[in-house]
Length: 286
Length: 319
Image 1 (tube, rainbow over the protein chains, first blue to last red):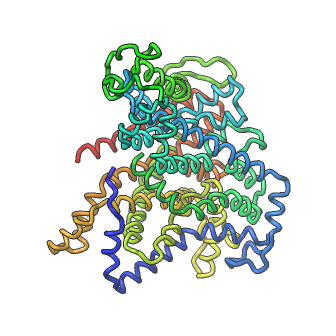
Image 2: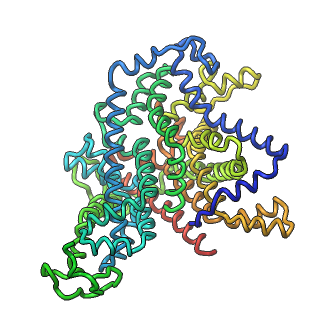
Image 3: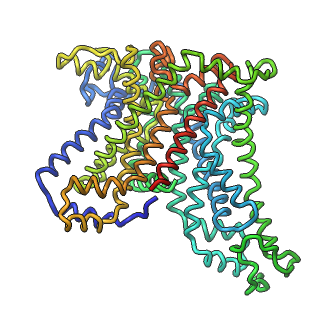
């Protein structure tokens, strides 16, 4: 969309004038921000409360306990769902990083008959919503024995038009001379892509990886349809069935929700800068 | 290294479309032909993937929408019966209205909120990263998990957080998820909350992309803050805004996770008052096993989404 201007100039300009109005704005923003994280705070708070304390509105539990976590984790289901989600999200992310960038690179850096057709064909799949494909996917999976399997959960997302388009845009910015020089050195095309071109687009790759990982980690609709046995549930599906089963034991449900949310929160706190930049990049270019 | 033979050969440049290929060299294949082998080697699996996992299912969905099929027997071609059934089904129109209520109310609210926050946040230096993190955090949470937290918040007192607070300050209780009037707005708030962080980040990126010289020039010309916002910031932000309007609209048209998890005892309830199109598709296909009818509903969803995307292209072209 827009070329990115240097952020520092606009910010230092804004800095020069410190008015009381600014303090008011800051306070409003701060309160708004607290409201945004209130559900998260109370989710964690309640996960450390006993059933009797749930109705207590205090944010810091009077007598914090780890009992809920011990009870939720004791039957090993959450661990299993966590491992399922991790395996699926990581595999799909690796596949996207590999194939989307390979296809994006090929479309950006080679001229061949059918290039434009393939590009338009891939791009046009952006218009097709997942919801329209789930019924055919379900039938296909039923016929091929993919229902209720890891592959069944993963196969629809192994490549995406969004990722391909994003990577193509970034590969287009690499000068052809770099690739030519590698050809003269006698590298084969695969090595040129992997060793020369890929390292030049690492910001885009990390943006793609973050987006794909988050999307698959939180995915709900297709995993809900394709899985039937608890052992294959992903974390979101597992949590949903767990919550239904717990009925009104809110402290248990909050503990489950906290366990489902905690991994991404930790990753975010560690990699905040990269994640925000990745989302900006993917959002604007995609 | 080995490819000395290629040096200086003009036809090995990849930039020339439709060149028939150079003279055979070295290993008997021209550089151009060898490159084509690589290209199609790279594309073979992806082309297969897009064909089998994207295009075939799309056509299949259109075909299924013209059949009557319960998964047990063979699909039976019934023409446009599914569509006539759908358009005369009051439940479909109710779902249709619900879906557009999410869209028409949810999109402007989330856009205005995220713009105001982004606009203010962009001017704040002190604690900027911290404040931004507060707003962004909900975006990376799992929708189905947070739907349960919100569901807890909406419970009647003394269980529910919101009603408990209302009770303490003497405001009458709200039925929230148990009310046919308030259930949909309650779910919508959850969905807006979940998407706000992304929109704020994108708006901030859009604001940063506006060259500061524009603002400086405007100040020299004596424009006030309000007219700078109206004449410079908003017009230059148009591509970002259009993108977010479309992105948010598509999100609301496809809303499912929150509704499913917040109404598990009566999906889409109470009395179907919160049911969106995607939940209806899910139930038609995977609870009643009316695959043909469900496929017809997905075709309607596809058509609506296509119109929204085309609208975006049209809005951006008109500049």
